[in-house]
Image (cartoon, rainbow over all chains, first blue to last red; front, side, top):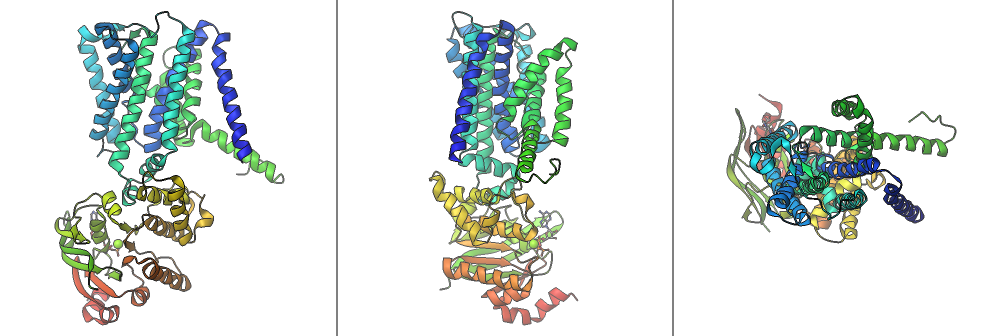
Length: 321
Length: 241
Ligand SMILES: Nc1ncnc2c1ncn2[C@@H]1O[C@H](COP(=O)(O)OP(=O)(O)OP(=O)(O)O)[C@@H](O)[C@H]1O
Ligand SMILES: [Mg+2]
């Protein structure tokens, strides 16, 4: 058991090093895909914390990324603030908004929470479009980069650090006492409360942390693209993140990572056939939610379980569950 | 000693057109096992829900240890030392049995080292004889096991007052005897006070010191179990006119 643990840890470390070295052998275009994938890892993993672990299916996650991006971008472009300070400010602002929306959504569950967060996201859109002087609307706001010299390779490492930080925060939370409370609230709120779980605190905390992480992701992304448009807090983006999480495996730690890379890479290939890929992903996500609610991770797991059982009981046919 | 650990004063609860409780007064003395009986729909579970903070009463007060807890949120009432089981069990289906109990234990000892609350969780699960199923997802349990899990979770909150809502359903005669022994030991060995809704009259007769009878939202009578079951009005309430 312990041996296997250390072996797994070494494998993980080796895989991570290999991944970190990968962009050196790639061209600019593929480096770009990896950076965008890492952005989606941050988005999907933090949305998963909220939706997958506390059952609050928010449609406002892209909006929180937008808050981070615009806050940081505006501070840097209009007030000359250092972009890194801007990222911190954007993260903080997203956390504050997450806290407030979390409280607003407290009494709401299921579809009502989804609708409220959808409304929040639409309001943000209207503000961005109307405050043209500040946000430049759909034209987009030009913002400075994070580094004095633009380098895809450097951005890759910044985004890798951001993704690892996000995953680290999520991992720590779900493996702490709080993780137990998260899952209890998701399974049965009333039973959780009867056992001493402060449901209000748990739900608002998940909302705040998840929004802060989305804000950080959005802020970093804005300073990478150098142009912030309403595409960042768009519903397209929201449904892409949702599809990544659901298809990868909602409520599992690695699911969003698999989903983010898988769908981002895939969308680069099918983009050639038109801009309908988000719609297609959405439909696949619906099917997955219906027929394989644990996503790819769940499918891998059950196949692996079967093979292991077949190895233990060779007489059993491999197909039997 | 006649210390009322739990008291209700003039408790009423209305659901739309249904008067589930009307001006109910009751007392549960510390260290006793008190039965709560009455025909279906009498308001027993509603009374538990009010005490446990699932919803507030329409009027009236609940006192625990002499202090009012009326309208407090459920998690705070739990932390005051009141635990309850649900008549229709509410397991965390996707979590293992041990995790189910650990939720209760960790909120009893927030910020304490994991070994401490995991020990409490394991002990509580073992107390109801479910340790062999500790890694099984709760949704795979049968009804009787789910009721045991309810009790294990309640015990892991380390309550002073344990409220049981029909935990004997589905048990055979011998299992009922074992369950009665178990509940009595909770009181005798751990000093728990037990407030117990049960339809199995034999269990109420054997285990309780006092029985409160509810009928149509009102207290019909209160007294020692032998007197209560012999009471004309009680027989009438159960058998109908
Ligand atoms: N949440 C609720 N909303 C509306 N009506 C309710 C609610 N809870 C209980 N009632 C109604 O209040 C009355 C008392 O119900 P309660 O569940 O307290 O009865 P009970 O004594 O526990 O019955 P049983 O022995 O069948 O469990 C019933 O008429 C019931 O339909
Ligand atoms: Mg009942």
